[in-house]
Amino acid sequence: MVSLDSAPLRHPFVSDFASVAVPLPGDGFLASSALAMFAALALAVVIAHRTSFGANVYAIGGDKTSAALMGVPMRRTMVMIYGLAGLYSALGGIIYALYTSSGYPLAGSGNELSAIAAVVLGGTLLTGGVGLVVGALFGGMIMGLIATLINFNGSLNGAWIIISSGVLLFVFIVMQRALVGSLTPRTAN
Image (cartoon, rainbow, N blue to C red; front, side, top):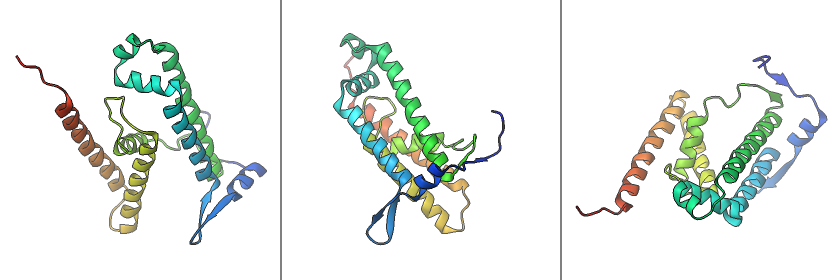
């Protein structure tokens, strides 16, 4: 990093991007950043559920050994997964920079727990192979609702958002562990 200072973005495209909005009933609107994220979500759903690459990702997440035995191209699929993760990370950074009209190198630091909690709340098993892309959206909406409720309460500080994320993540991990444990066939000795 060259600097930790926030750099303002002063380009006509930034103001044009911020001015795009789709009106919703009841004085609401969808901003251009939300529209871009919905487009990225739609692309991710198509990739995950309508392509052989998506099927390969689910197979590897379910069981690497079985996926390799089924003929899934492991290395190529793993490289494509990391490439897609990089693409979506870059897109998220660009949209965030356009949304705030500035570039800040530490923006989003510390949001890892919230991202994992949103995905787990959305129904993705941490053991892999089970989950939906749209589930992560609903998990993120639940996390946003909790953050909004804590902020509007007024008597709680922002640390409670992180605490609630951690508690929810812990509860869902325990629930997933119990679910996976109850579905695993037991062998008789």
